Length: 417
Image (cartoon, rainbow, N blue to C red):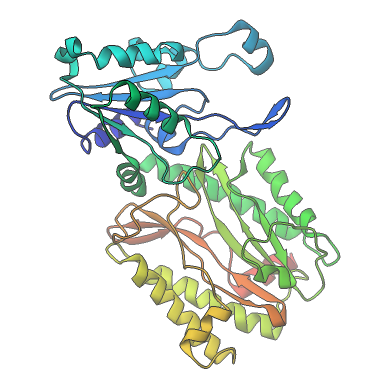
């Protein structure tokens, strides 16, 4: 991936004589002697390619020059024995495409920034008077993020410095995927397909939902990948609960099982939903409902194009579900669809499953968006969702998950095997 090109693109959106800060983050404390698994800050990774905690990327922009600096932990022989050595400066330079002399020990960050902000150093980048931070509007923990903590410290030391957030800049840049990003999501989708087929082959009444999830995870483990989010394996009425993740019920004969799952490949996510008959054969009613959801999925994918708004996108697919629900005898009035369909039709996909983007703007060329209509009939124990990952191009769309079978006949034929 061309991280240097991404940093150059980012720099066109910020003011001259500015610094931009991006923090990798830390794994939160889990217990007295354990931490949760580390998840790198996505904006930091997008611009650096570094997947290591306690690291900082600084982009300095002058009127006529641009430099990137990476701060990581230096080699610690004791830490190396317990947790591994981490990246060397040379390895970090190669991955990030940042000059080796600009890769520095994290312990020197404060001193380095202090030097850049001295009036006497303005010959390098000018008199720096703006600092951009990746500031979350709402902290996900009770503690400040690394970015917020450093911003507060910097503001106290340099009160004349103007602080700006760069979140929307990164959101719009990340919405448009480059060829490398598309390739990563394609590979995630390929593994998802293999894992779903393996899982489907082992489905049978009497199993527990977690056994189906274990089959899925087995294939992911064999590919040295992980789920991109908590797997939903919801059978019967459980499938009418959108975020059901208990996955502990028995799968009964004549019930459906709804899978909503994905793969994280090189930090990029797939997000796929498929619904299968546990015994390999749809009942007449299940098939009727399934065909309505499939119609909404396929027609919306065919209709999707750059330049349409997210509202138009949602309204188009929702109307197909409304018309179908009337045919099924579920509703009489359009507004009653909310009883059986209560989520949006899709979202942007990328480094995050629900990826960043300017949702107020039309869908641009290069975006990857999910199309995931569903119908959830609790009184009948039927929950169906069908979701694909769609690349929007100037000529139309490319369905990155088209090879994951979804027609009634294909599913039944595959399960019969």
